[in-house]
Image 1: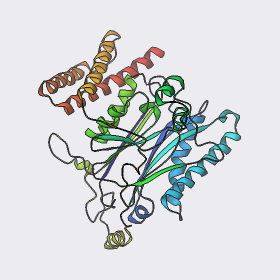
Image 2: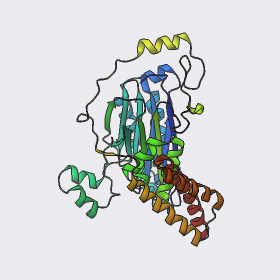
Image 3: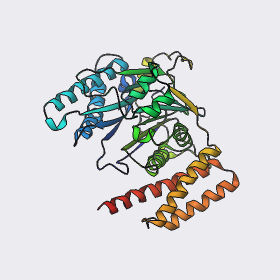
Amino acid sequence: MNWDDTIIDASATDTGMRRRNNQDSHATVRAANVETWRRRGHLFMVADGMGAHAAGELASKMACDLIPHSYMKAKAGAPGEAIAKAFREVSSQIHVRAAANRDFDGMGTTCTSLLLLPEGALVAHVGDSRAYRIRDGRIDQLSFDHSLVWELVRRNHLTREQANVSIPKNVITRSLGPAEVDVDLEGPLAVREGDVYLLCSDGLSGPVEDPELGAFAAHFHPRDASRYLLHLANLRGGLDNITVVIVRIGPWVDPESGEIDQRDAPAAKGRDANGAPRSWKDRLLARLTAPKAPQTLTAEEEHRYRSCECPIGDKLLDDLGRLVEGTRETAIAQAWSVDWPRLAEHRRKLHEAQDAGQRRLVLREIGEMASMLGQAGRFHRKQVAT
């Protein structure tokens, strides 16, 4: 990757439909200058806390506050060494904090981070929050779930089908919180323009299938895709906190108009990530210190723990269409507070797109309807609870 490359990111988080507080956290830290970029790149992170009272919320916040700070300030060590060290240090700090307060007993958090570096993409993770890459119509899971289900399958004790039926999915085997922790590193992996990376807590990856994650992330701007996916999870019950971070490499070109979204215009040659002019010294330093391109890994060498195609297919559209239509009928029956004329307009556009065979537009209208109904459902549930 280069300092001038366009990188578009967006995030969304929600308590979900059942929880009272949000124990998820996320962080985005862009390199402030070319020198920091060369050494540490850009960092994106998701953490899912656990523990009674406010313990999980505190643990995930500590991870997303302290790990980026520790990593970016590290003077020595390659990026992989520095991020793993930052993970271990924060795990130890969480452990000390929990030991000092009985209310924080069992406090911990998952943590998954993506580093975009001159050498490529590097994933560091502990727990079952996930990192995905969407490329060429496929979604690849780049992180291993540190969960009882995945560990039993890896050790050949059970098949994946047996484990999914007999083992609780929310039992994790590794987290930040113990005095010592092993940190998994994946990469650096070669990056291509058009790649999309998605980080999320299990509040999203649980109710939303991989092909659905890939279809939305691949075909919509990160701002819209993150919003659609969050509310899709809520329409399917929202049983847990939901957090998603989506990172797209390269400019966003609207498929209908063919125009580049100027809000995401690339840092032009000779300008920094904030659009400010870069000095000739910065430009020269970027050229002289650019690392050699890494050897591209083959599919076998990359750890793609799961992989599947993610087209906008008939089954996906039918399943999602039934979901939003069923939720709309529930909203009518229970008198949810919905902007009904606006929802009707999206429904009309959906049917027009179906008649014209424009699958992406169908998916977009499903996403808009899911967003409206998801927000209305949360508001209605809160009103009933009070």
